[in-house]
Length: 362
Image: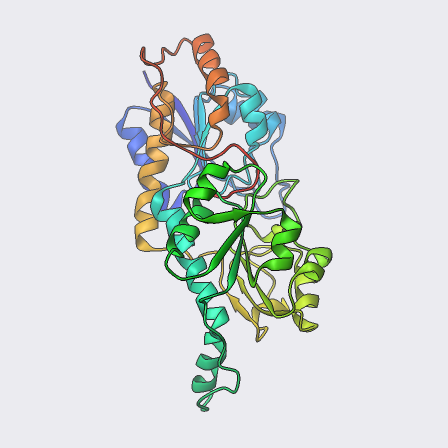
């Protein structure tokens, strides 16, 4: 039986997933982005047109988040998914309340690519690599401030999801002290990774490098602002590879200009793309990238496959390959039963789960 899958008009690299849906005999319905001058968001008419009889959706729809109103207007919906690791544009809490499973692009290539990048940024910042590179590029040679060794430093991990765990594993053998703040993490996981759990204030006061690796929600928005910078050690470093609004950019600029911070690795921005005159783009203490520091050809190859699997599994009544809200499973079973979808008689297969919590990213 052909089922209806709603996707954005342009899927880019994830077009492969749409082809997989069609090859499986399903109908792919594309939602156009708002035209210039047209208001964003979903009108009741648009919700009815695209989601009123939809069985699944894939994608982050430009100008239109998948809100509770959209989900409530989709009585047949079995599963939804983001093709990337971020689910900022999907109301996952509402989906869980309604019994809708949400998949996402948490492929190992994705979160481990970010973990690799975080380790790279830690070493580059501490060793003053940007200053050394700039000196040679500009016709000079050596700089007076050579930087320091990573060995013996205290690395503070804010969030111990898949990315944070990947960073911790990659720093084994570097002779660093690993501390972590994440009120939702299983302490057994931290113990196995030789990570000491502390509260956020203690982490900020203790760490030589603070790396934020959290999801964006009401609890984590601007979780690093003036107060938090004030707690940090003079000459500490900050790395943000999670989501831009986790760090207050105005406060970050003040901390850099005052000399409080020695350097920053910044891959994510409060507004993306960030404005051309944002001083963080060219600040001499900032390694700045455009929300792609952990990207690779391997990541790009993995995402369409994961997107297709997440949706096709959900449509069959099987747990998505990578599920963002595993706590939904009981309600999801109930929703599928009401829709007449028969789950596998032995229960749903267990796949990679992210702690339902609110901090650790990936």
